[in-house]
Image (cartoon, rainbow, N blue to C red):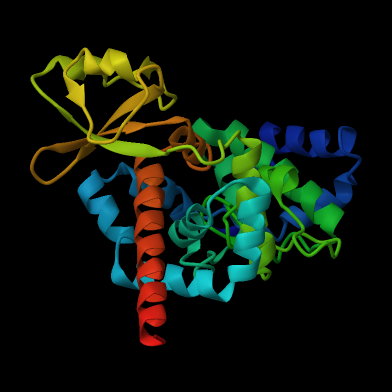
Length: 321
């Protein structure tokens, strides 16, 4: 956006309230804050990107973005390169290595694409010029400035996604402050350049959202008739016992405990739809990104990477006999 448009933001009551919050609540210097924002750009292309997220696609199109040979092979390579950290972190936090790998694969192609927008531009644009999400992004902008002060970073330097997500695991500033982990105990949680820190941070995020070690994530199911549609309601948290879904003529090849809490989910295919049930751990994945498409992409990519890696291990072992 032009300098004049940025000036228009700086002249608003919303901006003045933000400056007052940063000074009164967090002891920032008002003059320094105002000077900083003279270098901030309000970008229309960020707003356009927010209005057409990938999660708005039907499942069969969304899935094709992530379930590719290159992303699966990239996951195997990332796992092999970070085997020590993944093994240690998985044991400590109880989050499977393949889930950690898949999250990083979906988010940034294993760190290859961490975003090209300055974080401060993204958060300012969405905080000051995107009214329907203004409160959330202004809160993230607060967290970002505090983070930069704490970590002694220049606020104009970090780059990330159009939504202000940062680093290899794409943490929002509030998530960084709450969950970023220092794997190597060197006093810094570097989710931009340190793969081990990024791995531990993802695991910590899931653990703190109550991941259940060793529990299932999701299962495909079948349904007869239309009674199951009564269970296709909003929300992502498991809301019915499995026995209640069975009463609606839903069945599964997998063994599911009758009293297990599940969530019935529908995924649009080119013809028809697939039905799945999400368990508690599936819900935990949606705490990272509140989309059932995202969580299913993470799950299916994790399975593909795991099996590809296991297959390579078996082939390598056979070759040495």
